[in-house]
Amino acid sequence: MRALPAGCAVPQEGELTRRAFDEPEHRWRTPFERDCGRIIHSRAFRRLAGKTQVFTDRGSDHFRSRLTHTMEVAQIARTIARALGLNEDLTEALALAHDIGHPPFGHAGERALDEELRRYGLRFDHNLHALRIVEHFENRHLEFRGLNLTLAVREGIVKHSRDYAAAEHPELREYFLDKRPPLEAQLIDLADEIAYLTADLDDGMEAEILTLEEIRGGVTLLERHYAALEAEHRGAPEKLLFQESLKLMLNALADDLVGEIGRRVGERGMASIEDIRNAEDRVAAFSPEMERLRREAKEFLYEKLYLCEDLRHGHERAEGVIRDLFAAWMADPERLPPGYAAQAAEEGAPRVIADYIAGMTDHFILETHRRVGKIAFSGESRQDRPAAGDQG
Ligand code: MG
Image 1: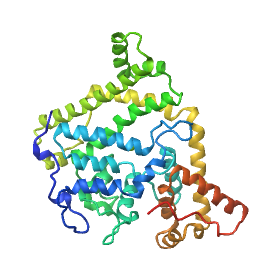
Image 2 (image 1 turned 30 degrees about the vertical axis):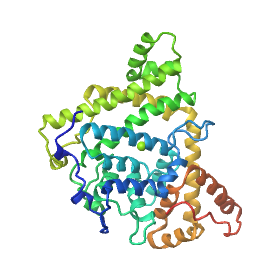
Image 3 (image 1 turned 90 degrees about the vertical axis):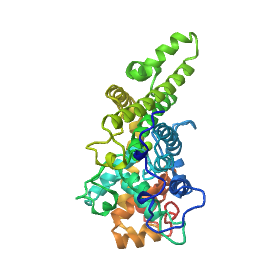
Image 4 (image 1 turned 60 degrees about the vertical axis):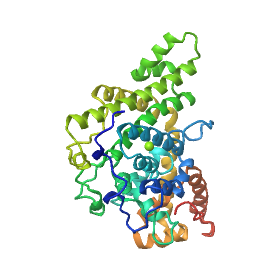
């Protein structure tokens, strides 16, 4: 254990547990455990099961969805939080929420939505969209709108992966924009990297896009373990050597992160959340050597997997579907499901269309595209509106 000074962890009470609407404390659950529960029980969380992580429609049930990816991130993040003596419940809540703002079709979907919104001077940002989901679109409580999450969880949802300039985002002023987030939030982005760097090698092999030879030649972090295991277990099946190496690669990344955070906190004499908030940069980081290996693995995945010819067709189709739907609804916002049509009249169609699309699963958006396409291109009656089902 490399526990940090106790003051570096977000406490289970105090300012950061504040909710927008006051609620009585729970008898035995901490505020952040309650937030975990609210996120798990939300509709947006369930929809993660139907959203692409990297692969869509490639004929295997073994690829990660955003939901299983999220569970992997939560497991890794919680382990790191425990090793450092940080707030595990808060860390888990942030991991569970970290991808709920993602639109369908993975990063291709996010890019396409952002491009559409830019035409109207707006942007799509999955962190800010996640905040809209938990504050406005999830409605399951009698007394308040949204999930009424604690301040620490809302701050972490906004800031876990990037900082926002206070001058550009006055609406986020509550979230200490001129300061770093607590370590529990900082480590989410890195736990996310650890999860997908290893999982995407695995899924890339499963999809038969990556070969073991390519991975061994391009990812030192894996090859190191593979070569040692191969020498130690002569004749063992490649598949098991690969899986074992992935596991050791994951452990090496997590161990390094724990060690480096501990080292930085110690070296700088940090003892409180304020010290972490006021630091010039984020304290959570890999060691320089591991950072180099992480970058190598990530560049390998970009070149051989994320941007490969094999996946490009899917990306183009995703962009086309989003572009078509956006154009059809911009031309006639009345074709949106009634609730959204009313909201579009109030808030402006582009943002509301983006909210609606972002909430969709891969399956639902394809089905909607088919139906809306029929109306938009053949002039059928407006009775055939898409179901109002997917968001909220
Ligand atoms: Mg993620």
